[in-house]
Image (cartoon, rainbow over all chains, first blue to last red; front, side, top):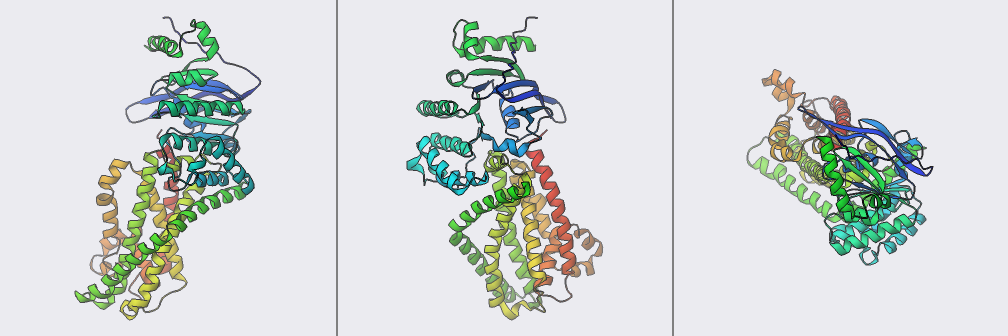
Length: 263
Length: 261
């Protein structure tokens, strides 16, 4: 059987996060589900790493494990060469996580959300004040500074969510479906913000099922399918290999191969 | 150093809780006053009017106050349930550089602060207005704050536990009829445990498995005194054990709920 699985492991010196043989198995009385099946990949410093896949592919499971919300069943993730589980709190200090569901403190204002986020990361008061002002300017939130979260639109909530994840200047930020359900113009604005973050040297793991988003933002693409890594490739190489097709066409073509291989 | 950092993050979480309390202080205080007035009217005037013996007024005063604690605890349980169901704030807090027990402790401490704001006016105004009607024999001023704190901590842990442990659908459909209502009814709330023991000793002994028995009896013993109630210090000790069990189960339930492997 012909198997269309492309899996190239990069070995750059500049790796920030190295995931090795990660498995996540959910069990109930009737069956076992391999949400992640032997996932190994490396994320390089300063890149936007796009995690793609259909619903149920394992994207959110992987990002939740990397956000340390869940432990894996087996395998490890090395951050700057050290297991994230050996230095859990040091890793969390270097991580910003924007989950799929907005989990801002709804009872606080935009400014208060950012201030308390700074305090949770033990930043000095002057640094918090400076960072809050910087982030409010960067995310164009000045006029909403004293608004409570429930008074904001979906797009503005998403900006605050990303701003909050950046308060402690993490090296790595995980964006889980950052533009889901947002209007096209707001999505564009958020894409520009994400590009700015990359330009500032922040490494970004972008989980999305919007192929245009992945195409616009990602340096490399990882396709997960049924919990397995089916492809890791730079966008340029991928397009060259597939005669400059759009990512959507490439994805659909590859997916057929994955389904055939799974059967 | 790490413990110091944890304590600082916990303090930051508490600062957030206190800011919210400050913002809602008048509203919370009014809640407490309305509750106090309602309880005082029932315990001080309606119960004697309908023929409840005067020696029962004090115990009933405690029971109605406990009922209020149940309501506030239940509200907290619903909030945490909603947070878990909707991927809410707790998911952010669990990614902070602090062990999750500190995060849980911040929820319980917040609950304790709210409850104190509501119940302190109740107890002060109640003792002042009801006075002789409570038929206080001897208030144990050492035991009273200790059993009150033990009660609040147990309630905080217990309500957080049920909010985390149960699925939303089951919680809303079944938690009152299957868990809370029997717990409340057989928690020596409508009677004194020793009175029950005199008539139905086996059943009374079985009800000793219910932590609410120790809360009802312990608070009565501390506030009213006399020999009609279980030993206050025994109640404190058993509540401590129950709180410890709730604490262990809470950590396990949270792990299972967040990671249903």
